Length: 274
Image (cartoon, rainbow, N blue to C red; front, side, top):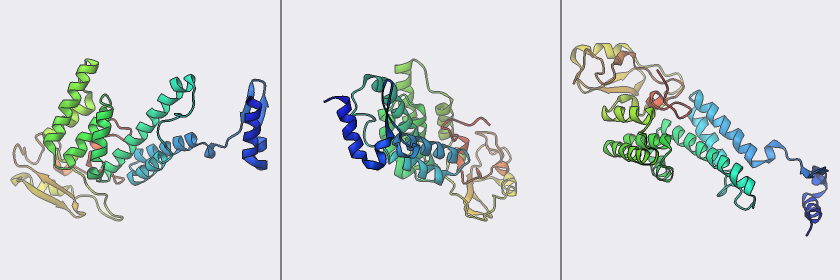
């Protein structure tokens, strides 16, 4: 069967309304497709929307857009097309974009306190992509928030061993700093639910009032228990955190619905420099 016969069948399948979409050019046939009609373009637009929402701390919206983008996927990209050029250029690119969308969704779910829901998936992905450090960071945070601190540290050691064996280099700053925060049980890693509309920020004076007699205690702000901290007396240093040198009175809500992990994981999946 010739290419003209294929084009003829395609025009018949498109019907009268779509016949004019196919035109002949010097080097072959061209079919016109609207941007919203091509699944690859729709996926890219939804992923861009998810990233934009993440950058401003709109984690609900980021999760929704990332999930919507991923629903467009059906197995491996271009698996039913025999093309060496596409296999070399497009398939790896599309697979990478899909993985980035998955990472964006998982990070958004973690920011929303759904660590139990994404833990199993994150474990599988970290095993499937052992050189992807950000996935290991997401796994460590999910394990820690599920009350599995020892396993979170073991996940770091496993990732470190793989990176050294495969690349000859240890983990980057994101994993190393997260490990130190897990070792210190840094409260910044704890999930703090998004404050309701009209809620108030934690009272900065609460930290100052505990300086004289700091114990393992909950310091509750006017915004309620969701904006409280557990603070140790060991190495108190007049109300300062001996582990990271930050004053409890200066600790604030992440803003924009962002939980405490905002100091660890940036919207793009990299640690923010403070």
